Image 1 (cartoon, helix red, strand yellow):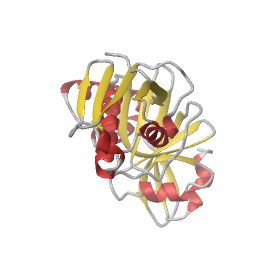
Image 2: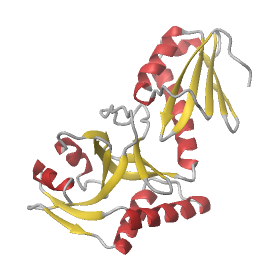
Image 3: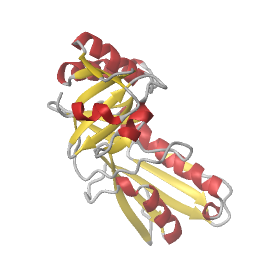
Length: 259
């Protein structure tokens, strides 16, 4: 890929993968991009993938060229004045990042709300309307990663959770910046109730719950199924899973860390 003259660059980190974003000299677009990705900006200078953005004065459409490690974007200058066009431009970049992240053999997207305190992370699973968004509103003294989709990365010894980059039409109320790794410590499967109660889930049931939650937000293919099964099995055998019966108040909070 050709080099950009008069460039400005920054690096973002999404679920442990680095992306450099380089902009042909245009301070307005550069600053807007940094603002959008500010919670993913990394001081680490290592990047595995490169996004390079060029401008055309008289262009009429976005042009994308990509290979295994690079994305080249040529965009009309009118992008600066047209918000709908700018959102399309941003969404194309985010979709490129998402596709790379979820194709990694160690990373899955899971249908869950996620939070953490210090470096301890928790996931709250359940189908739509089970209370994931409600839970995030009640999690005082915890930092929220998201209320619907969370990235999960596995290593030989640990599982880590991360926010999922949002498209322009998606919820953007969670703006938590991670300066350290968040270790997944517990998983809660939500059940609305008139009283608060926790019940430990067997590994077999935990596997089914986790598998379902990953499948709900994954594009299933032959390769994906193998990865999803493997990660679900490892999660179920390594991380404690509880059914969490809860009311619409914060009375459940005193139990989360102690279980």
